[in-house]
Image 1: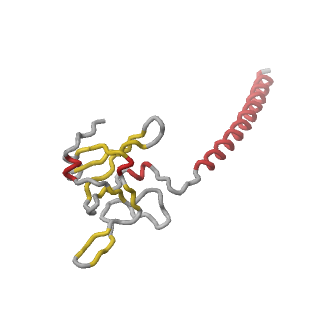
Image 2 (image 1 turned 135 degrees about the vertical axis):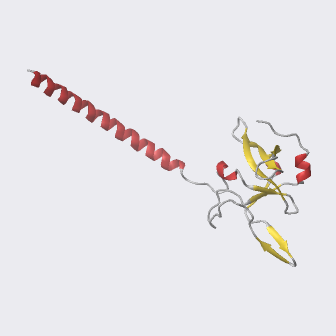
Image 3 (image 1 turned 60 degrees about the horizontal axis):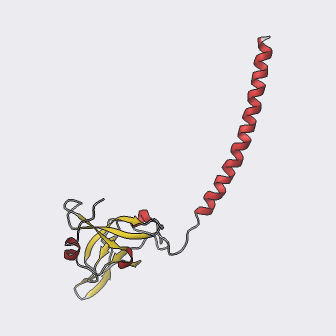
Length: 157
């Protein structure tokens, strides 16, 4: 008699497991389809995680800081860029906020002048990107000096 109840319990469990597996398969298929659709890249868009650490230069090609953070408004647009200015290896660095639209984004490396020739070099510790990777710009240009940025009110989180 116990065997009869045990057999009934096993049969019932297997029926429920089959129904649950059928539901899981359908749900998984829907998740895969939506994930595939969201991986399409669009030209002119950058990954925010790749913008963190991008060097910022002034118009004289002098490095004045790097991007420490992006501030996004309720509308979803980047409103401010927090720049780390001054300091050495993060010690003594001051964060200042500048408007996103004040930055000019550049995809080519910063040209440097050595002697009488102009060469293009990248003096960053960021990984070198391949020629077809456009997930972030090479650097940004801001019409300001390092001293002007240091004189700004520090940004506090």
